[in-house]
Length: 540
Image: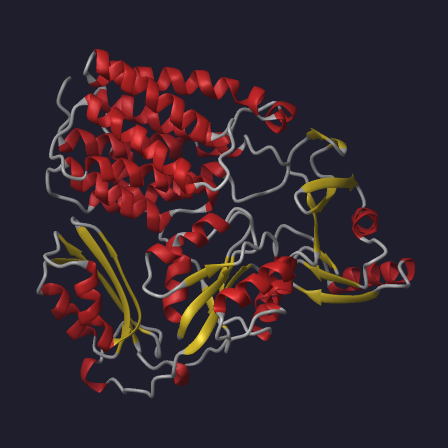
């Protein structure tokens, strides 16, 4: 097979997603930490479901348009570090193929090389022994094979053979993998995708993928001020323009006067529009002038139903833009209230096990009426998705790389909504986040043999920053031991946020004992309501 036409290319993309989805749990199980996480397999799968949705909407038989759609879909749907890395692979991949209606095996392999190079440029500190290494070595092996014999099946077999070989070596490259007795999860996920491509090239059809429901992207966003009276533009309007005859920039200029929360993203094959407006009909007319519309969705945000009253919409005064708005990622009603009380404009629901996508964060950023946006990801696995927001909205975005909820709260101590020098303020926020130690208490979901010792499934574990430092079968003892590991002579304040699995009475009793054990500390207890973590602990 020397020529890859659009229908086969599309099946390869769909089958890659299907193979990963089918093996998602196996990839998640490779997590080296024995805690529930924004697992690699889940994040890669959700990112690829966005690709499935994007390419399924391309009807033109053109490989380049499908590749471009995969790049846009993966960018908007990227979740977690593994999902963002995967989106960068598709980005370079799509850029290389964008003008090609049909491709050869060599074109495909060279596109993978370009994608790998794009990933290495996007990741600040590439770590070898991860999916990056698997991606690079496998793509180069495929390019070498295709240069000798420009046929699809031998090229894909070379791609897979090298991916398997490199993946098997990842424990020797990363000690943490060797200690846990696993290979790199992202590399394993990538291997499943490549195997799906080979299955499609061998004649297997990805019917299960193309027919299964696609996970919708948006996670709940909790604005700090809610209520119908605060909504200036009442209709949340979304639609797609197929084969658009307009640039994103021009379309954005025409739609901007109609409302706020405008988001216009896409490529040469499809553009997605999201806008809050009092005249959704006019927004649709503008879109219709430039191509066929689909995926139309209009919600009355004031009445919370979908009955449209185009002619009776009431125009409310538009709140002026403030200089700087801030978005935080958090989970739990209590944590959301705490962040809102400190001036956060919107709290995007997310964290462990539920990493928000780039689109979730971009949607929140467009809703906040501010000239510039600061994002607090509050989780190491959300930082890269947050950094991509600047590429898809039309206002400056600054990411303070907070890796925990305590760091996010500490960073807010330096936030100023009226700041004139935003870069300097962001630098102060980044410095402030380092002034706190972060700890979590949760339950091990599997046996684990690490630096702290032999942990059994069901043990309570105490995590200081990113390292398990204590464990045991009693919540109070593990919490106390963790606090002792966190406190030093400079500590003055101990804050505990109890989660949904701890009663207020139990949390108060543990807090009282800690206050007695550490009399020199000011101790405070707050209800976070967060899942997974029994306690989130901050020491300042």
